[in-house]
Length: 248
Image 1 (cartoon, rainbow, N blue to C red):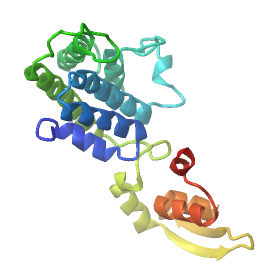
Image 2: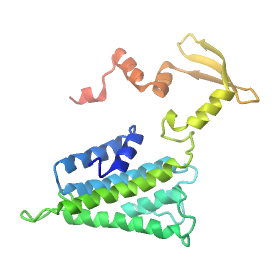
Image 3: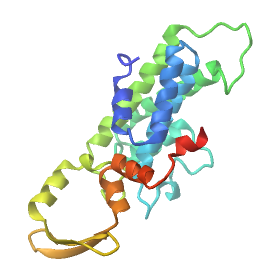
Image 4: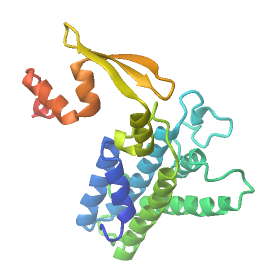
């Protein structure tokens, strides 16, 4: 599958911290290995998950796209095409309806619609089938995979070309190398000390104006922001129980 879907693998790797992306990807891999017609449902779910992820990352909380007068996701149950339209809007891929690029977006939306029709015809769970009906051919399943990969690659490449807002981003620290370098070059720690309750307190000079910024951070906040594995280990050492252990 990796040869057919390099963009899906890249997208999943980029959003490795997003549990719903991982779940959608795992479902797709599972049905593909089983040579199952469910790959068509899973391909559609992967595209929809990718669109929702991009919308969630780029949406402005002060002016959410769902509240826009012409919002494509105003309805209670938006379609995959609606989510794709929302993603392309937030990616600024189309300036207006007369934009020549709008026809390209329309074709991708048509591909999304076709995936939905494949799903309706071949879904193995959500849409019941006759017991002796023939499986769809490998060509149909391959088309669903390649189409999904094309759509996700198109959106992901567009997403990577823009600068997201670090104050609201779900992206990790490594997503902002230029900003990180600029901050480290112009700012510095001025003072750090540990308070009685174990909280780290300090002052930082910000930028060329050397404006001072005070901060205080607890051990849990520090580990959660810098080292999630150490955070989990500290929790276990404190007598905590991992959620997966609770379920077993």
